[in-house]
Length: 174
Image (cartoon, rainbow, N blue to C red):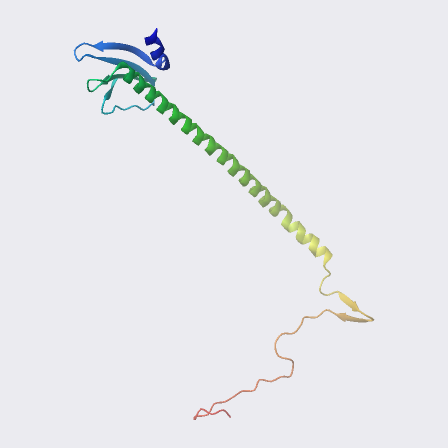
């Protein structure tokens, strides 16, 4: 009963547990889904027994004496929890990218809607403004007198002349 309780956390992954009588320790064979990571360390070795598209069969065994069955089970649990964390992180990242994509699509949709409105309405507002403003040739009444609109003059007043200064050889102004 105690052995079954200890193996329960890795129940769906463990294929076999056997004793290596030559070395005097236990070996485990476990199956992992395709793409899962695993790697041995200073005390436990991971050896690929068979690899398919569906997954990988690996053998886990000690490198040194003193590694117990409980240590092998804990190592398998570490492999399972590490891959679960990786899958969770990937899902969070994918969800985050999806949310960002939705937000960018919403911003792009607003932009293109505004752009279309600008394309459609910009010339109609010109027509509206044109109807409101009187043409420049129209007379504007100021008081009793009628004056035609005229362009304001720029520059010097009429009749003003430019006085030229001449500089002599000595550099004095005349």
